Image 1 (cartoon, helix red, strand yellow):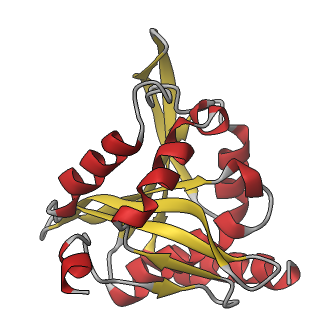
Image 2 (cartoon, rainbow, N blue to C red; image 1 turned 180 degrees about the vertical axis):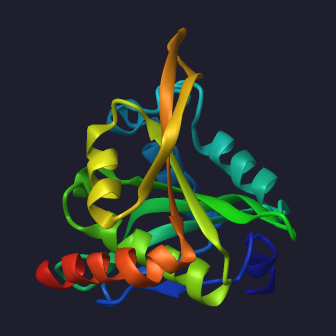
Length: 209
């Protein structure tokens, strides 16, 4: 047990509001899933700068996990979801990164990848709700940022409906397959979480039960 604990990036586990998901720190047992998730064509549709399966396998996933383990500005989680049989299965990954906590700034970024096998299952909504709740209510961070490619209509629609605010466009900031792509940034402030976003996500989660 001590050996496994020493390989973890952190010890924070988070449970979703319905009891069907948990966010757990990445462990060696998750490396194969991370390699599958990050190289899947559906994942790379809007993140085509991610390497393909010929360049990112089990060993690369292990190196990535180990390189991020001691970085205090990054917190990664694996999304575990209960299937119909009540067994926990790997369903995605989440990260809180670029954490800045100074007198002048108090913010972080969030990223999420959901397994293509369970798109439109509501797991992204519940995962983002769970992580945002931790960030705003436990850590008391003032602002959360989300970046996505400008043509990622699905993610942008989700953020708009949740009440996140569009801050602007970063022109040609990502290089995808040799071509530059624009990205957009959304944000949620702590008061917006309490007054707008949290109630909206809770409503969406409750309707999906």
